[in-house]
Image (cartoon, rainbow, N blue to C red):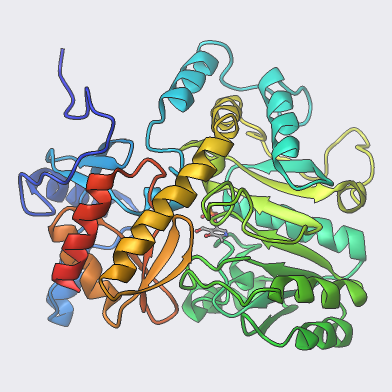
Length: 425
Ligand SMILES: Cc1ncc(COP(=O)(O)O)c(C=O)c1O
């Protein structure tokens, strides 16, 4: 039987590179990808670099991952400081998630969404309500973060009778047709689609005077204020203490609902179960929820969700794979470890942030959602990769190196990463 390099490991090891990145196996696979995938999706950086005259490389190709380690198609072992876009908070291939998914695969792969629900989805909805702030106890499940935000926006329109949405500079809520106009991170993501997307979206600076929120909500008849309590892709930005609470007060005084997008910062990532210190009307959850399976939720108060009315026989919001049983089983295994995961993010985050600060680096964020402010975060991320550490640049000018690793990151991995960062920064 073929042995995989990740057998007998918990994924707490330092990098071990056996080829330069990308190696020959990755390169051959990326060539196949380039022949069959839409060219806008996977960056073929070496080709772009050749045309621009700058040094860059094509991506490596993931083969497997455990804990905080991943292996590529050439057998290179890396340390993942991204948790795969913030998904593997519990760890890659967490044993409880894998066991729950296997058990579900042996029982039921697919049921009938809204028409005939299955047991696992019902159990998951119950567990999710228990994990959410008090009063947020009705959910619409989805498969992606964008699905959750789409459902949040539709709910707010029904609950308030207003279609305007207020978001904040640097915000990112997904790239579906419904969510792309809501991102205020890169105009190039939404500009080509302006003619077919939501025309009534307003943007204020993140951390603005909360009175500006009230004034805009009133003037423009806004029904939803949508905010990331800690901005992720926008640069791991934490607003001033009390800002979120004041935004809530202003929005509600003028008739708008408030939704928190905790798709990245929620579920323990910041060392608290939820990053927001005040309870919203609606909460978008995704990424870490499925432990690696695609699953998301828009969770709301019974008042907000009640605006949909009772089902009249045909759901007016559903999808074929609503509440996919395997994703729900995996999510139950994640929620079963939520307290442990949250405590680990707080403890590991304090150690990582402390080590970075001790090196004189400027660190922002909370728990294991950290950003290191660096003038050349893009270049630093390339140089870290050459040493086997995967981290992504974030921020509107790419001014931050984002660190959202699995909560099982080991002491050795933290120390090794900080040493590598100091060498290449
Ligand atoms: C805060 C936030 N909201 C929404 C999304 C979109 O999630 P998805 O890519 O699963 O649609 C992301 C993804 O990075 C995110 O960080």
